[in-house]
Length: 195
Image (cartoon, rainbow, N blue to C red; front, top):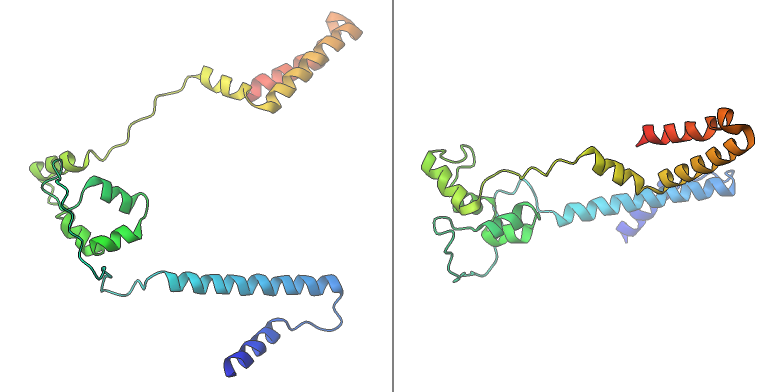
């Protein structure tokens, strides 16, 4: 009962709305209170869902999993590239907990938390063979023609080109070739500069 009373006091303090406020101002005040409360509840739920960072003991499952699949491509490490990708790229915390937390993954990779890998030629070659090279493939370069084609896929550019054609045609018809091309031609030049 005390917590309910305390919650009521807190919400009354938060909703300290004077009687003289107009109806729209009361609605704004109420909306603010709802947003404030929902953000508070969301942050509390988020903090409850994430494990404590200061906890040195890593959580491990209450059962032991024995993986009996042969690892032909990765005999020297206790973790394979697919599992490592799931942990890192997909940020799969369940998979990390499955392996026994960060210290177990570090020992499976035969590294040191502070010092990293050994760094000898044999060690680096063994890691590249097991996990692949730590490089990205450079995407092929795109020519200016590719960007022009992409620009012509934009609806705004197509509408401007249509308007420029109409303006050029009607301008030449009304004012003659000497003075009629100014408006349509300037729209064509502007579209060319945008592309």
